[in-house]
Length: 217
Image 1 (cartoon, rainbow, N blue to C red):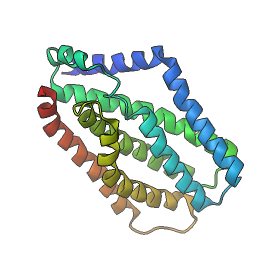
Image 2: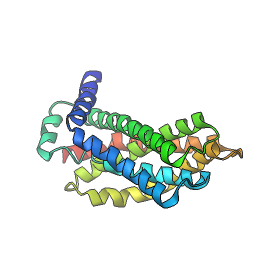
Image 3: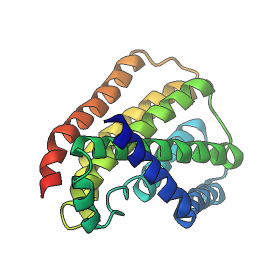
């Protein structure tokens, strides 16, 4: 399983590198969004900064990670079907999405620090939460992209299904990050972090169970 898995991840990374215009487009989108926020709000306080950061991460994920399945031609799935197991294919897409989103999160954090300042008390803790948020958003939108790709490449379906999942997850991630931004200690934050990790694991297992049925369609 490891050889096809690594081959699929490598294929997606090489394809992303060859289509640099798409990658640069996402980076330009991040830069434009952060610059627009800077022009309208200047350097906001810590609470507003935290909210703007996670909203930006949401839109970045939709523009970068969510197209992982939608960018694949329908006819190519038949070829993949003859080569790898559906679970291997899904996990490879998720790992590729996580790596891409982690890179985009780093770019976002650098631009936020450059233009909007860095009102963070515990930088290492915020970086850890940002990484957790990147993994969470990537897992959710990769799974939704897989569902949308089997529903006539309907991207609107992904937005409809994703809203009930993403809204509470963003609220929890913002609450967790607030512990790193504000100097006040937030008790029980580790329980909230466990809930986020539990949701990621649940969505991962749902994808492993349900994707083989979508794969056969």
